Each structure stands twice: as structure tokens, then as C-alpha cells.
Length: 227
Image 1 (tube, rainbow, N blue to C red):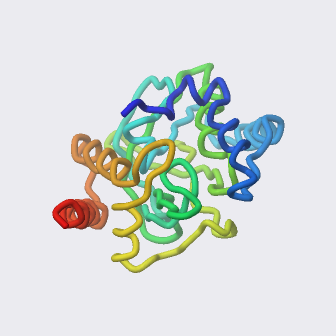
Image 2: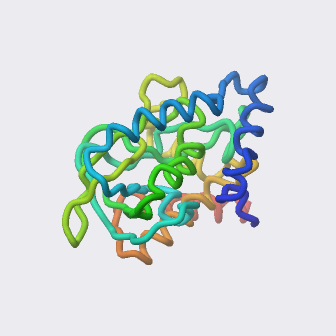
Image 3: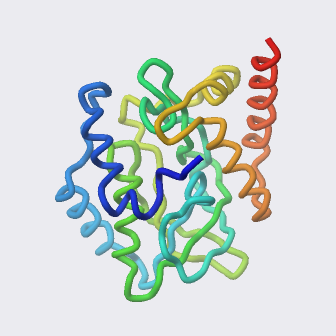
């Protein structure tokens, strides 16, 4: 399947146009270009250090869509990876919404940190911003990510618990059902999960719960195919 969420589609506004076109269906208003630019400037100006990294914990691991000068595995504390964000678009529909990953409060999370090129930090961060901050799903935060070569100053995107699409900690069987059946214009939730797990394994990033969900979703889909 062609990757519809890439640097080009983000830069030329395809993602924003799709969200705008579907606003009458989802009742979700995407932020305007001006609103996103203003929030990015305010956030970037508050960077605690000169070097800027982006911490990815889901699709950013395997589809960062940014230029970077270095990447490292890293861990952040205070948040854990969770399928707690419901999506009626992208990898779901209003009739059968999907679930995607977010960082929710508590615990820790291991993922991948990408260093933005010197002198181009804000420009590259704008690509991530247009992707992750188009809606009210996430809040951007600065975190101290610990890598094998020491701590780095990183931006990451955590769950906005005030959005109506926050579902908290669903029962495991419901998570599996959503992941096994939901599909949208970006593809299936199952594909999203498979890509995330495959690239985490490749990078040596472990997550017992996520790997368990992969096995359960595969089993659910295999059972459906046999019936």
C-alpha cells in the first residue's frame, strides 16, 4: 500500500485538506495554518536547549517524514504508550473508528529519538507539527529522553485527555476488535500495529503489551478469515 502520510503530502497540505473536507462528518475542526504556525513558534521559543530531538513512540518510529542528522533509541518517563486515541479518520471511520497510539500519563516509554539538523530545527519541526498538531488530539511537551549516549532534549506528543476521542484504558478484547477491523484512508489499524512492532523489533525496542496485542490481533484476523 502506498504511504499516503509522507513528507510531500504533509508539506503540500493534503492532510489538512482531507481533515477539512471531512469536518462535516466528524465534527472535528482542524487548526488553521495560522493557528498551527503560532502554536509552533510559541512552543519552539520555549526550547530548554539548542539541540532539538523528536521522540517517536508509534508511527514516527517507522515513518518520521522528517530530515534528521542522527537517531537513537531512547526512553522517557512519566508517560506510557497506549492505544487510547480513537480515530474516525485515517485508520477508521465514524461507523467503525480505529485506535492509534498516544502517550498517556504514568510509567515510561521506550522509542526512537531523531535529532533535527542544526539550523533547520524549526523548519523540520513544522513538518511534525502539521502532522501531529492538526487536531486537538495531542499536546506537545518537552521531555528529557535518555539514550544510550546520554540524555537529549526532545519534543513529543502526549494525549490530550480533554478531547472526546480519548478513550482511556479500554478492555483488551475491545482494543483487539478495533485494531483487527478498523480501516480508513491511511490504511488499517492492523497494518499500523504491524509496522510499529516490526520496526521496534528491528531497533531492539521492547514493549511486552504491544507485542501481545500484535499476536492477539493476528489471531483474531486469522479466525475471521477461516470463518
